[in-house]
Amino acid sequence: MSTLLRVNDVHIAYGKVEAVRGVSLDVAANEIVTIIGANGAGKTTLLNAIMGILPLKGGVSFAGNDLARLEIEDRVAAGLSLVPEHRELFAAMSVEDNLRLGAFRIGNALAAQSLERVFTLFPRLKERRRQLAGTLSGGEQQMLAMGRALMGAPKLLMLDEPSLGLAPIIVADIFRTVSELRASGVSVLLVEQNAQAALQIADRAYVMELGEFVLQGAAKDVASNARVAESYLGVG
Image (cartoon, rainbow, N blue to C red; front, side, top):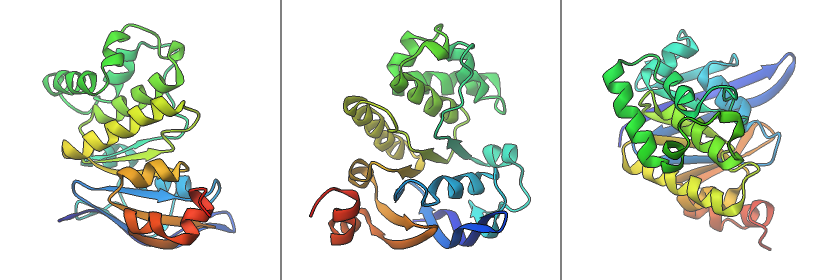
């Protein structure tokens, strides 16, 4: 299985405060990898640095290419995409217009194919394609944020807390869709406080505490770890 994303000994600081220390991870093609941990552990900081939003020290490569000199737009063009925690939709624009913004780097024919693919994944978005994004429910907005990121046909989708603030039935829909993405050839790096849901669909997992990975391995093994069960799964 080929490695798609490789993060090697990464350090990220806010001024003199080091938020992430010596972190290394990899994501293979057709794999779901999750990073679980408490709020403030450094998970979002790491995703933002991989995307190029924050500076970092260390190595990050994607599909064998060093990302150090690539701007955010070039990382997107290479097949890397991030769905941020707060979704960052354009509330006064329609669902379809928000989606089309995600396809700004591909031609019209490919954009049309991507749009149909997103509508197949999220039929509710097709029903609401003319509706303003700001009038959607929280779950629909999360679907729209994911759909917009998928419009550019990414190889790796990074999801930051996709279940945040959503009802359990909607969370189940979102995570089912994440599993479908892997089946369609899109790898996923999932940051999630809902450890139980994340570990159920992930292939591998990293546990992050205070800016460092304290445990990693197959998701089923991490889920059965006594410390993880007690701290993150409410068992014990």
